[in-house]
Amino acid sequence: MDATKTLLAEGGATPTVDAISRRAGVGAATVVRTFGSKEALIDAAVAELLVPLVQRGRDALLEPDAEQALRGFLVEVIAFQSTYWIMGERLGEMDLPATTAQRAALNAAGLDLITRARDDGAIRTDIEASVVTVLIGEVTYAVARSQSASPALSESYVSVIMDGLRPQPVRP
Image (tube, rainbow, N blue to C red):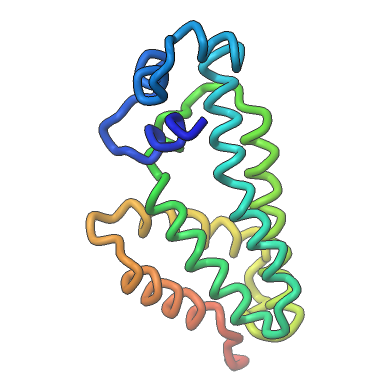
């Protein structure tokens, strides 16, 4: 499992059964026997990687300041994507039910944070929450893939996006 997660984070590595088994120091047959298939192993590894991020989103819902909770969550999402963006590129057409479930939970936590921030007046309500979710998701992915991705870039991006989401004065 650890070997698979490491390969998923590496830009040039391909998570084949042979590469995973070499990295883990076991035979390819052991990998297949243990997980059933490469897809099942990758699904388990990716889902496991997403668990702490999903939990962070759920924990953020309990924070007293909705804007700061959303902001902190976005910084963590970008950090995760900066490490694992290549993973999404490689998963392509694989059938990954556990990963799909964790991604849905992550999206739900993000939508809940956005809805809470809207309800608290911290972000604008003239843009649908689902649109805000897509906007944030697509741009965080782009920032994470940037050659100059860094904590400073992430913080700057989150500041710009939060400023853009701040409620706007009514225009005549």
